[in-house]
Picture 1 (cartoon, helix red, strand yellow):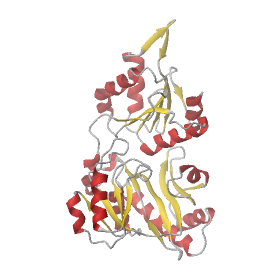
Picture 2: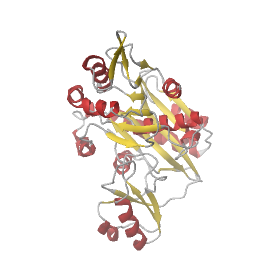
Picture 3: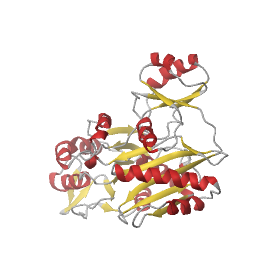
Picture 4: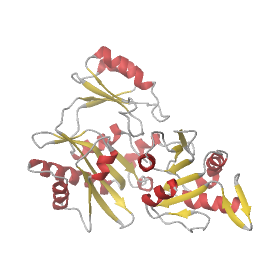
Length: 367
């Protein structure tokens, strides 16, 4: 489960990661009660990536402008999601924007430190300059300093970034996180840093061990999926439990195809549930996809942490939903299903294309 930016920053502040002064806004009338000096930044609090491009981040100079912006943002859907809360934050000028993060890498069964000298919304530049460092036994600031040097930092900036990594790792292990990211991490001329945005993905199985996190459960989606149609004429759909990963796959396919139009018909985003939940609710998702005749390939880029992929493939093989056909005794599916998981699956039926990496997924998607 992903947290909203303001919630992630609440946890950042708990461990001393530098954040800017801020206040949440739940209604336009609350703007007059802001205690932040202008100019300020007002941000839509949704889970969608790329809020800036969609107009979800606005700079304002005074209260009158702030009221108008707040009314606009509450009525602005970003990838189909309307905000329930906005975040007003002090404006801060920085010299550079970095990316730092920690994630659990299932391929090596270890936490992985991530850093890039190109933070912000330009995903291509971020990925091109991304450096990683696996944590073998336990975290050490020395590891973070090596990574900081790899992305070209010098002097005080190295110590500042290493300190942020140490505090991020504290949150990572304390709350059993799947992912923690700061993008961008603002770097000032004096070498100090500040978290300008943040992402935290909670491991739902850890909620029993951390009742203090229960207040964030209200952001779980009750519906089986969220559907975002990008291009009704496209022939590929994506199913994922990670909004960021789905968008990244979409962008990479678009780069490969050198197209100005989105290459994806629809992105289906799934909440983290349980195997029992998917056994009862997966039919609506499958039938929705099967009835879209334009879609010829479905990219399943899913962790399988909750057994979704196991239930999906079992349903397609055994239950024969709409769209299933048999040719010369062989089981064929329309559309084709291209699958990549992080967690193991119970079986890998021959009817599906199984991938070990996102690059394989992208190659099969364009083929």
